[in-house]
Amino acid sequence: MVRKRSEEELRSILAVQIEALRDSCASYDNGKTWEALRLATTTFVLVHDTGSRAKSVLGQLGAKNSMLFLASAEALGPNEVGMPPLVSSIAKPGEASYVPKLGRFPANHSLVSFKDWWQRQLIFKNGPNTITRKRLTFGLRNMDGGAHYDEEIRKPDYAAVADNKMSSIRHRDGVYRTVPGLQHAMMRQVAWELLESLKTHGLYSE
Image (cartoon, rainbow, N blue to C red; front, side):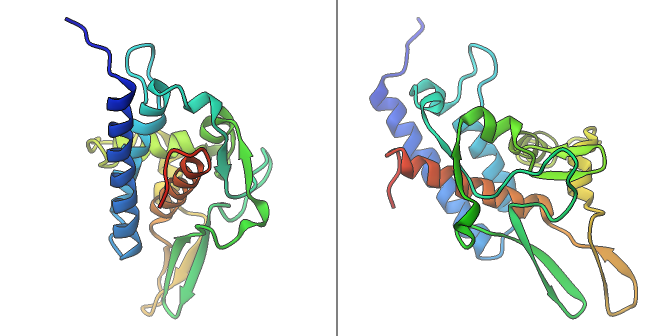
């Protein structure tokens, strides 16, 4: 017998997923950047609908398409190349890393529809390779360990983010190496945006 979930049950499920998102964010901020993989999986569960049967938690609650989502930076234009707008870089002698902006730079914050936030705004561009929040989340979840590891990274757009040949730093041995962790820092920022969006819509409070 098919049983439809009640709104009370869905609210309880939402609370669990928000707690998972918060805990993974805190763990990431404490240095466990691999938590970006779990952030991708939880984000997927919360917002992504696959056809008519596999619906997101926010979709089942009827909230997703009535919400406005926080975009914490201006999206890249089709001809722009530069620092991915969701992150900053920190450089030390022989060492560099990417960090999420979180709420530190609010001047360019805007509220947009789910479709714009999830699959229209570009958050990375390098040559023909572009990334949206959806593609970033799918790459981390579907290919890079959120749900499983693919033998090959088949999507060139995600590979461009994961390999990140946009920036490099000279190490103490004189060799230039790419700065790692861009995809993880971007995913942490997406999770921050999602939590802020849920807070604005009254679905989450700290």
